[in-house]
Amino acid sequence: MGFVAFMSSTAGRALRGVAGLALVAVGFVLGGAWLALVGVGVVFIAVGVFDICLLAPLFKQPFSGKAVRARL
Image 1 (cartoon, rainbow, N blue to C red):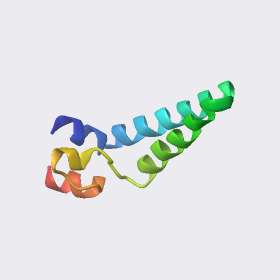
Image 2 (image 1 turned 45 degrees about the vertical axis):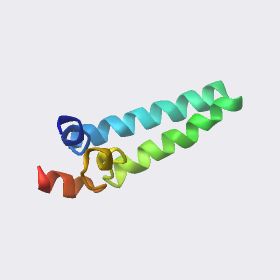
Image 3 (image 1 turned 135 degrees about the horizontal axis):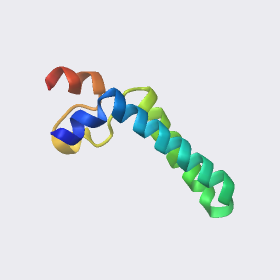
């Protein structure tokens, strides 16, 4: 439960945003097939901004970070 609690927290959302920005930057710098990282990075940024945890259902928790925080 600790992982889902962290990822739904403000720090977890910030971590996803920073990781997404890093993936976007690496994808643009390396170019070519590495541009696929840009798409992955955009997904990381989006789930951080919209407060969604894509892995939460694996731990029997809802997608919404707000709902996870309310449960925990």
